[in-house]
Image (tube, rainbow, N blue to C red):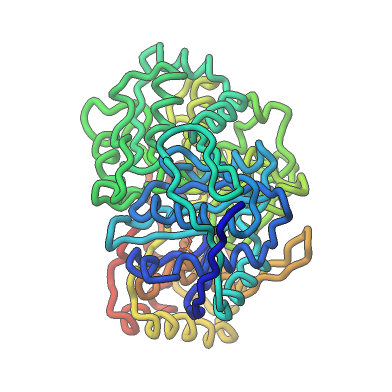
Amino acid sequence: MQNTLTICTTGFNDQKPGTSGLRKRVPVFQQPHYLANFVQSIFDSISPPPGATLVLGGDGRYYNREAIQIILKMAAANGFSRVLVGQGGILSTPAASCVIRKYATFGGIILSASHNPGGPEGDFGIKYNTANGGPAPEKITEAIFDLSKKITQYQLVDAPDVALDTLGDYSVGSMIVSVIDPVADYAELMASLFDFDAIRGLFASGFRIKFDAMHAVNGPYAREIFIKRLGATEDSIINCVPLPDFGNGHPDPNLTYAHELVEILYGENAPDFGAASDGDGDRNMILGRHFFVNPSDSLAILTANATRVPGYSSGIAGVARSMPTSAAVDRVAKELAIPCFETPTGWKFFGNLMDAGKVTLCGEESFGTGSDHIREKDGLWAVLFWLNVIAARNQSVETITREHWAHFGRNVYSRHDFEAIPAEAANGVMQHLKNNFASLPGQKIGSYTVAVCDDFSYTDPVDGSVSSGQGLRVLFTDGSRIVFRLSGTGTEGATIRIYLEAYDPNVENHHLDAQEALAELIRIAGQLSELEARTGRVQPTVIT
Ligand code: G1P
Ligand code: ZN
């Protein structure tokens, strides 16, 4: 028998899940009842049937362990019969998705603020994933938000903390908690998709890699896969000890925040291949020697080379990309004669397409790439995919990318982020753009002519649900475009993202730096948005 306690509480008004779950500063989550209210709202919105199993784990950031203990006691009080929790409270986001699917559980709770910084003053986050292993769709996240405003009580059992560091089964009230190896199931899945012998051979032939886990969750996964299973040398991995504050870093694998890796790959005697992943292990950045692969190009290149990889050798059903992601993959899909879907930003929109078998590979410009092997983006998966393609083609990252551009043309692409802008000013920029939308089509601006302006809206082809207000698009007659969007993952002020894309069929130009090639579009984006006048910002905080 278990001793269930009912705790009286009142709702908070700010627990609206964003692009990927609820993210707030750690001190916000540490307020009395804050986490428990949200967790109870999740459980009330999903009503777990008797006997249900939950998966639970996080990226190890500050407050992870405390949160796990609270959630375990609440899961027991809310009728779960079993929870699978990663040892030490650790599960990367892709590993959590893998475990939910492999053991056919009811769902999972993932504790992470992804690429946001951690530590006592950093960010924390929580999200719910459904039985398919993917982020809950909007109808569930909206129900959670509604309940979180009205909540009056939550339940938890009175039980001691679970020894999270030791594998094995424990009781919390009448519920069983199984502390599982967080790496094993995931590593096995990777070995089933990729030609590990070929990659081992590549490493044995002297091909040198550098993988940067950024002191985040993927450290133990990288050690198991690259060092133990693929025979890479010890110096192939860096920053592989996970730390609750990510070593004071910003665990976002891009050219700005993964500068340690970037300096190595652009330095003297650079390795052949570099890669990094983010706080919860679902993002990836791919580098060659002195070479950066844009994530939109990466999705296109993996799609074009998929049949060289055992897990995809029989071909792919279709591809999907988020709207702001470049159309490079569309060109590959066209040649392969497979469908290509354009979805709103956020991985949750890919789930239905994959469940329905319409899509095999998908990706986002924000360093997210993945496939239907799970229902989250997957950082190490992308790295292994590239290594498998390199082993099969016996060519460098740069040669593979340049040959791709030579064949398909190049969608020159960049994203400019303007972070921590006062919400009012940011909304003013968006409103100003919208106000001018009616008059822009047909206008010639510099060497570009505006074709269409709209606010992107998506109708899910599987369940018919409509998601509107997903980003302002200015489409030019030559296929170039500028997209303006407000971030849905930040915790401080607003972040304006400007996505710039121009198609260039001419191989001769492909030595050009993206910023140079996009210079005119960058100027037009500033002119149309009045960004500088309205926000005082001239330079982006981050350029990717
Ligand atoms: C950002 C990215 C988006 C990604 C999300 C979660 O969301 O832009 O592609 O799915 O993080 O990793 P945003 O802050 O733009 O809402
Ligand atoms: Zn992430």
